[in-house]
Length: 250
Image (cartoon, rainbow, N blue to C red):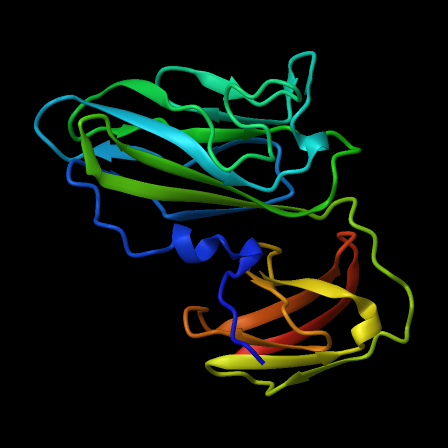
């Protein structure tokens, strides 16, 4: 079994590479986890220099399905906002990103003033028919005149409200050890077609997402997971939860 940490679609190996920290700005978090979204979700920026700086950014990867990208009236399914404005991706409009290419257009911000926690966020307004599942949006952001300052922001979004649970009782799952320490193993029916395992805490927040690469088993690394009680939700290729197992991390 291959150990996977945030192996979602394979691109995280690039997104979480230890890049040089921004020389003139910081972001609140490299990764923002969002569950059942509706509204604005911030990853604010602080200019750490003594003068104004201008940043530029672009979307470098996204796996949101088309039904998250429509703009229906004033309802923007998915958009990105900096201190200059907000940009929504509409089907057929590739000026930002279209969900199928690896690089979107580059956008230039207004000045970010020194020492101020300033705006950068995404807007999520999925409709009742927007696909359920776990999706990501990766953004490269850097100082306009300093490419070496580049940072990655990753927004990981899980929509579970409308996620059906497969009622087939034959999907038996073994989880061990429980309590777990640095890792936990799951063995399940290969016919369940498990593609993703999402780890939730007791208040329903997504803590980690693991990409499954074998037919009937997974090994989840828990070294960066705080102690507590968790639920491992096994999700198939259709975004359905095929089973859930509770365990404790010591």
